[in-house]
Length: 93
Image (cartoon, helix red, strand yellow):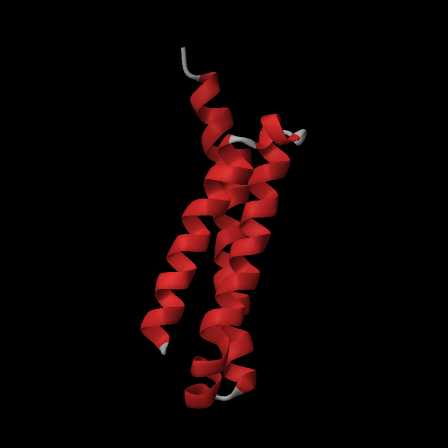
């Protein structure tokens, strides 16, 4: 069952990133908004697909903690790229 969920996750992942990020302007939304919508969709899908099997093994509290840590790492990476890496890249001569 987990293999089916993983395959479903991969198909939805590929389809949604193409639809929202690449073709976002064609749908009437900016590429940034499309990327944010895609990221939110991926977090929700990963929780919906991998949450119940993980909760059976770890329990709901630890599963919620693991997903919160994954989201926090993603937010931290995003903030690092936007506020540290990209401005430093633009400031180079």
